[in-house]
Every structure is written in structure tokens, then in C-alpha cells.
Image (cartoon, rainbow, N blue to C red; front, side, top):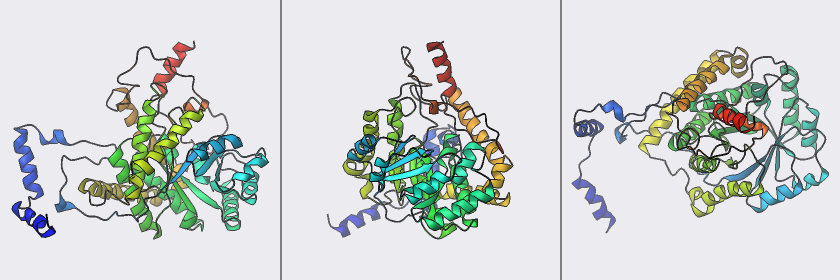
Length: 435
């Protein structure tokens, strides 16, 4: 069929406007309420039964960056053998989320090009030592403040140390940790708006956008997460006149100890959304992240990303969803809501003031409580945890990171604590299993 013949076929089908589509749907409902076809979301953005080109605005196209880097994560200082194992199975960047102290073995110097340190703790000296030794450092100053309720030393000293680190070492960057907020129950709008607010705080300190490293988390609302990343890129570009380099990992909010293989299905959807949303780097988590340190499960986690890159060919097509009426409209509405919340944060004094006044904590608590209530009454389904349960299942003994940590130190203000939806159920089962 020639191109001319193909195009003439469209002349046989006159265009139908949005109003006529809606009228047809209402007629087919035969008296049923049209509102039953509308699905609400936590962000207040209703999902409608159809979207039409009458309201189409393709404003969220991002640059052609279909390739993504594959990352892997350690929450402790690893052995050289473990690093080599993950590199052999596809890991390109090795992220270490740990207090470096002075226990870093010399043999890790051989992996400088692959290692990226995310130093935890309150001591600055190891941070400078890592940078001096040529390691890449991503320092989450505001992330640490959010998680712990304390500065490393104090605001003035931490700011000066961060500026000194970035000025002296080109391999260092300021990390924007919005993934922790998602783990605590922040919705999509909150996660993006607070990430932008952190970026604005760093910019006010004189740190250029090119030295900022935003890290977000994605959940299993596949199309919504793609729209979130499109909206975030759009707003970052509006704020800084450049594209962000986004790192993505799966949220911990929906991960479970019960029926843990379901976690692999969840991360599969989440990794697909990250790729199609245009993530620059993706750090997948293994299905047993909450209860084991298993080489085989790490291999499976890396394989999920290798499948998306090489076999599914997801990474070959930049912005594959460009032009989707639903995604463009959802991204536009997410952009507006995120921009509104960002302006509110800035009007209240910015990210640090929002945290100091407890506004951030209250807003995230409210969003988390709504989602928790939906999980508790079965509207928010986690298969294997609150639906389709196995009566004979034994819950594995968790690692410490599986539950809310009990902090005893004095804090400047209440920290934002990550909580999984299934924690209460799992605690009860573990109590019965191990009385």
C-alpha cells in the first residue's frame, strides 16, 4: 500500500471530538453513572476513561537519552570478590551507602572508576579522605538531615564543608535524596516537589545544577511513574535551564517479607517505568533485600535491567511514550500540582524551614496514613501480603533495615522515617513465629 493510499483511508473516517466520545460512552452505560469509570489517585489526579487530542499538549518531551547506566547497591563496605561478581553480571556503577570511617581496605582502590560512595554518619573527615583518594562521592547533606533530624555538625559548618568539597574535588556532587521520602509514604507530587526544593536550597548556597544528583524512587503505578519522571524533567529544566541526571531505585514502601518473590514482579514494573521515564541511572534492589544478602538474588536484580536493555530493547527508543494523550495530560497535571507545592515550600522559607517547622513531616504523614488505611482495608493491594495469602507461609527473619529503626539520639526536629505498608502485619507474624 502506497503512502498516498494509506493517508486517503483516514478520509473515510471523519474526526470525532471529545464531547461526542463522552456522549457515546454515556449512552453505552445505559443509565449507569459515568463517574464509576473515573479512578482517583493519591495526588488528586483522576484517571478518566478516555483522553482526546482536543486537549493534547506535547510539552514534556525529554532529550533522546535512551541508554541508562546499571547500578548496584551495598549498605556496607564490600569485599573485592563481591564487587567483581556484580561487575561480571552487568553492574556498571557500584554504589556504597555506608559510613566509610577508616576501614576501607586498600584493595578497593582498584575499583575507583566503578565505586560511588554515599557517605552516611556525621563525620566529615572520611568524606574528604574518600575524595582525596579519587573516589566519586555523592553527599546527601539534606537527605541526612531529613532521615536523622540532625546536621552532620551544624548548618553553617556543613554548608562550608560541602562547598569546600565540591570546589576542591570535581568527582564530588551534592545528592538530592527524594527516594527516602517515597519510602516514608510521600506521594508523587510530594516526592518531586521536595526534590526540587532541595535543589533550590543547594542553588541558593551557590552550588550549580550540574553538581546536583537527584535520586528518586518509583513504585508500581507504571504509567503514573513514567508521567512523574516526565514532569520532573520538565520542571527541573524550567528551574535550571538544563536537564537533570536522574538516578532511580525501587521504593521500599511496597516491599514485603511475605511471599517475597512478589517483590521481583514489583521491581520489574518499577524498572520498566524508570527506563521508559528516561532515567539516566537505575539501581535495582533484589527481591530479598529486606532479609538476605544473596549473590544469586543480586544476579537476578541485575538481570532484570539487562533484559530491559538488551532483550526487551526498551533502551533503544528515546521517549517512546511521546504523544500519548494520557501520559501527556497526566504529566501536565502532575507538573502543575508539583509546581504549586514547590512554590508553597519556597514561600514558607524553603526546604530546611519546611522541615524545621514540621510542615514536611505532617504532609508526608497525611499521605502515608491515607495509603496505610487503603492497605489495611484492602483497597491498596499487595498480593501475598494482604490478598491471596498463603496459610502455610513462614516469614523469613528480617535484617535490621526491614523495620523502622529505633533512634535514641537527641534531634533538632522529628526525622522523616521510612515505613513499609506491611510492617505491622509482619511484626505480628514474626512475634508468633518467634515468641
